[in-house]
Length: 121
Image 1 (cartoon, rainbow, N blue to C red):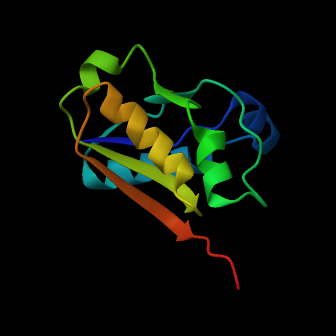
Image 2: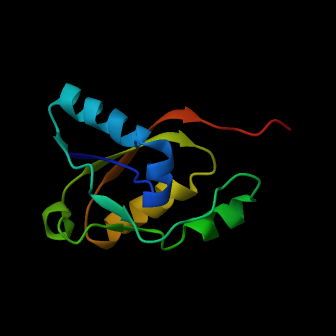
């Protein structure tokens, strides 16, 4: 199994100074004795913040935003992947990441998140 974080776009990474999901995924991989590939996925484009968007808008915002890094595409085919993200709201980002992995033949895909954000109604 390969452990990989959901990537940040370079702009967001520069602003935050680190990728929290990458920090978490590295520790999870080490603890479980699994391969950690922090650059398995790449952001193809900057996507605006998801705040205050409907679920459909969130999925549309993430559509085509993520891909498997070409350097890893062949090596990930047929391999299970544990995808790590810090927070999940609608699931749009992890859906885009899992779709990118499945498109190159990876799988099965498992997802672990630290927190699940829900709206108060």
